[in-house]
Length: 342
Length: 285
Image 1 (cartoon, rainbow over the protein chains, first blue to last red):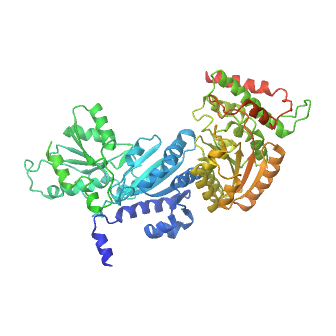
Image 2: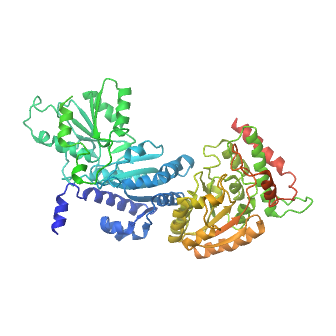
């Protein structure tokens, strides 16, 4: 019991709101669409603990497969050729490397090759447990034609994007970021732009969320995954202090949560950059060859007057130690420094 | 198509085999002229797909590997459609599909077809809920690949209506079995997954048909996988644009095992194929 309490307090504790939102989206859509089936290692056990609604209502559509990520994904592709809409659970994002062939060669190519388009969702989670259990391979998949890449950072986004993934023909890599902590999502939480879309609706791909509106904003911060939360926490004291003086706290900025890494909402990003002319990309991943590099290159090419900076993880192997792992990703202090030191 | 009288009366199955042989011979010429892609032919192996497909219903599904032209022909894909895809399609011979004939999937990467076919068969049984079956062809070389093993395991534990047909030509491209197969027979590997299996002479089309009739009915009635190992001989190169390491002497010995050896080809077939090729080439240019 004491251990449980400790785990709850740990920053590495499992988030529930995000997980529940994904489970709820799958459950709700399974009720509408009988071709959705869940496949994965220990899938039945997982829904028992994580999504009891699915176990209660659709147990016959949850299928436990062996520990064979590549074969399981190919198996799901085969089923999709006859109209099944598989949700393949690869469990941990690192395990995606074991399914690279079936994802990048088999799944990603099917909709190019045939008229009846497959709908496939491949789920996995970013963990924090060391070299092969703490990686973030999402950027790799943005490189592959035929794949969509989604990293939601709020339960509402997770719910809406999962609905879209299940309703739109195509292959979606759907990532769950376990570093995101549960927060008070019932309030509008600083979200401005996308708040008009209620919880029950699907969120279109290729739209980002205006997570925080800066006043007298002079920097546009572009982020995703757990870094959205880190950035918001870093800016929190400034945001909620209504007696601030712009001269004293010039770091007030717009924060955009990408949430879809492919396709990307270029139109909105460019509109925001017209305002500030400064782009700070804060990513929860290795910056070298990452999503931020693609955005920086595109903006440099198409908006040469915009200055670009990146903040992210070093190109280093993830250590198992939690204290060492904590040093991999940008901290709140680094976020503030980067905004301040232009 | 009526049976054509030649010196020796051909059976329906032999005539179907000739359709593949003559089509591939013509495509071979195109390749030699530099007009075709690096195609993979089934010369010498035709009896397997013809025998197996003769045991299938039209509504049964077919999944296969990269040596797919023969299989598409055997499954009844119209020649013109097939040639359009092979000569000028965006999928090409190694990724094409013809859902109308239930030729669902073929794939260049060795082994992938096994788990994909297992998933397809799973969907036939659990989603469409029909009693159709899926047949998947693969070579003996695929049995050294992880996807073959993961696919066999999935087919067995998920109990899917899948007939696995191994075209055992004792080659992996240009590599001999001692480099990839430590067991004598491929079915020794199948038995590790608790899948019932049988070995047949893959160059005897009637024998293949007989075994396939049993296998298809086994899979259809029990709804579980069955494995057929068909020993055969690849009389051509692995693919166009690649040499063959076998000696002339060995090839001459193998030619004696040719299932079409000594048979006279049916009249009119060459002209029929030629006419379609001309139409496809005219349409494509």
